[in-house]
Length: 295
Image (cartoon, rainbow, N blue to C red; front, side, top):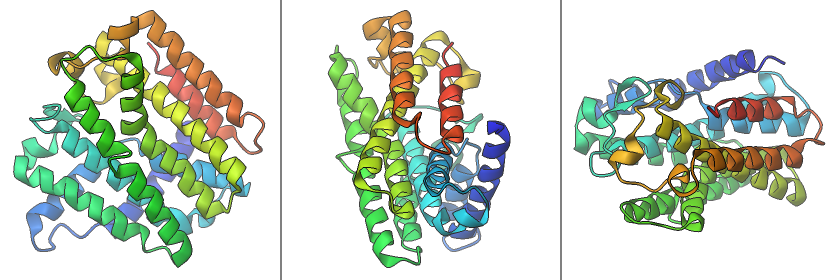
């Protein structure tokens, strides 16, 4: 299995579905719909929806385009939520990032007010999209997972603690909690959603949730390292953002070498969770790709 080809294929399927589920950019009021489409289609790896699709295919032990058509509303909903979080993170009064994925951030392109509303619109569009599932019981289960992941118990809560912790010497457990919520919550949701759609049992669901949280934390630790060493090409944004915003990071608390060890341990722990699951080759390759990001 060549992961690059798999990602390219699934990314194309997801992009076509996103185009269907987003309002056309000439829909009134046009400016907000142009901003939504600009932000969604400004690039991006589609890691979270592909992560969900790969897990779903692993659980079904089947890999073909037709088998994933029924879960595309859920995959698109995850990407909309993720993009909304990036728009809000980039705002001048949060991370003040002028560039995202090599292009001007939403607020640079459309102004602060429209950027705030674009993030809000993508969140509501996400919930609307997941309700397009034909199975209403599964739609409600998926909606509950997405609401929890994006709430003050998840993504929003992590962002708030991140904001109030800047310019402070926070302890490692606080930083870990921020990352588990900001980055881990949507990855965990991706696994939970795949389990709902594939009718996985509770034991498998819990194991894959832990797998996702390990990946999410490892990914964020590596991002902290990349920001510290100035690896813009791997971050898909300007490095040095954490220093500018006076944020505590893993390298600040532990040093770069110890941070690398932490990331490798998290990836190793994630690998141990799924290494005996059948048809796990894509998820194992995703782990290898994350490991390869360590400079």
